[in-house]
Length: 110
Image (cartoon, rainbow, N blue to C red; front, side, top):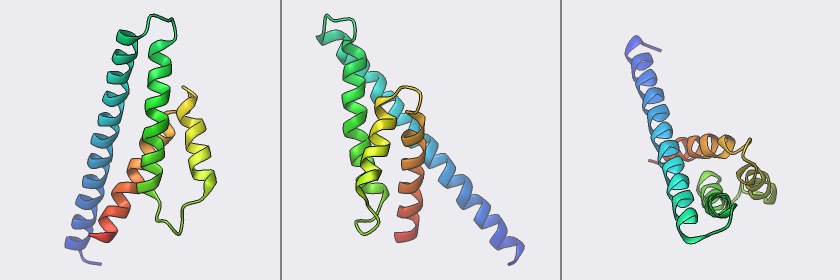
């Protein structure tokens, strides 16, 4: 492997990291927007949390669909990442890992 190949590999890795970070920031902003919508349309104490939970549950389902090829997709991917989306503590796992898989899968097929 030449030094040019190593530099190209590093650039590609940094590009993948930057794209994943941008994707994750967009998902966090999406969740914040849903929290604002939940606060605006509900008068209950837990309206924003419920709105964000539902939005992330739907979003994670779509992300799992794009992150795994149909042959590799299993039921426990949806369940596991759904549980992570519903728990506040584990939410960063699908918000970082699934975009990373999507970026890597996209790079392999392009």
